[in-house]
Length: 423
Image 1: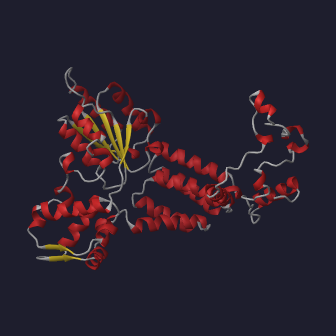
Image 2: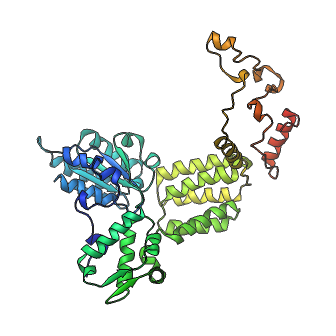
Image 3: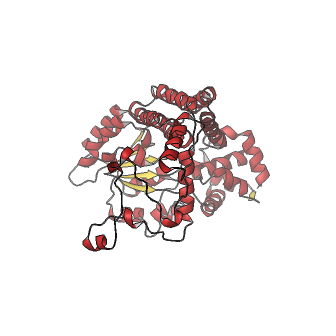
């Protein structure tokens, strides 16, 4: 049985590599790696199917250095230690260190990442990590500080067209077929900037018929509707479930929220992605109606990072139920959006009132900086009425308390009492 098209067309050199010109182009940093042989530990961050693993393989092959490979999904601390020992046995005075490639490095927990630190520091190996998640959140700071981070972008339509042309002209099996591409809209749309997905789709549509073939948008759509599970594990249904999950929490339905949580976990969704969504939900949809929601969501985020699955499912479930059953308010979300909309479209450089400015020099003090400022704690109730907005915006309201919940009804009453109807 023939290997999948994506494997048959995997590039072996940088010249064969499609896309990511900012990294592999004529002046790209990866060209310099191959010219000099000096390669730091680095992390490739980008969406699926843009060539992270391929790029790592090319660097190792071109420099003729051994590369150990671990998958963060299946490997543990024991596997890391075994690789470190193997790498040490290959160390000689005149040889460069081997590479250690870790796919989906964001799935390594703190202990697993800690186990890499010493070897990276001592140069036992050069680490190459690949991740679809922001390394700032997923990689521990000591390890991240020892790695360069290179961002890979989704493939543009021009890149996908180049890949499609190469597949039809260079692949031995497809070249034997009489294949004509009349339309590429559906091919590129379903691919979503993912080279591997494009080649998988091409495998499906060419495998659905024998002999000569004309590829149209309708034909591609029809084939994929019959084979959706074969290529679209991270596709439309995946995002539909996430959307339903978020809307169930927002809609205060704990049963639906738990159901969609279970579907995501059973489908292999990264628990830390879910935890991040819960932090956002706590701020955006619950907000000041229950400020404790953000504290619990943050605690959940930290706990999921520390313990991982399967225990993390319990922490996620507890937080999901708490957020779903909490009162809701989006007043903070709306307030910052109103303020940003005004600021981003405000062409005037509105001066800060003089009484609110610092006066670190005599000249500034003489110019009136800070004059008239009232220190709130010197006044009854720790409040002194004065204008804080630029004069031309006096009285503008960005924050509108949602008085349908008890917590913000108290906030609204306090604001009215302090400002005597101004807000």
